[in-house]
Image (tube, one colour):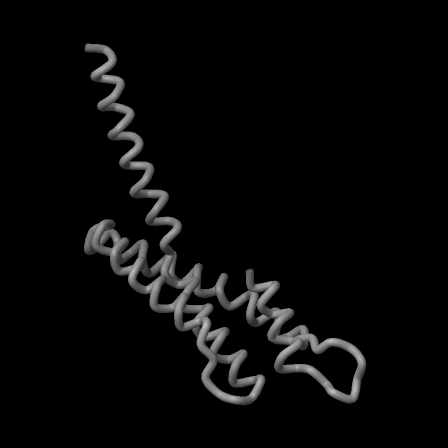
Length: 127
């Protein structure tokens, strides 16, 4: 959805009234908005993988779920009135939204549940 959001932000914050063209974000800002979440994901994978080993996956899963909700709501907020300030806050919150690593923990927990559930159902079918 960030591609749609960047088009809208370009039309709102980078609109030139003298020009007949629609406003667009500069390429370096588009690259920053798209790339910062991937950087956060890389850092989050390493940090929460380590933390999941130390504290337990279920506890870290709850923490990442809480972080995802907070930063999802926060990424919709814009602090500042200048276009650069708005894009900086968007990039800041997108980094932390990418940091939460919820998808990997969901996969791990779902995989463990499915394996246990399938093993139990196979044992019951054999009896």
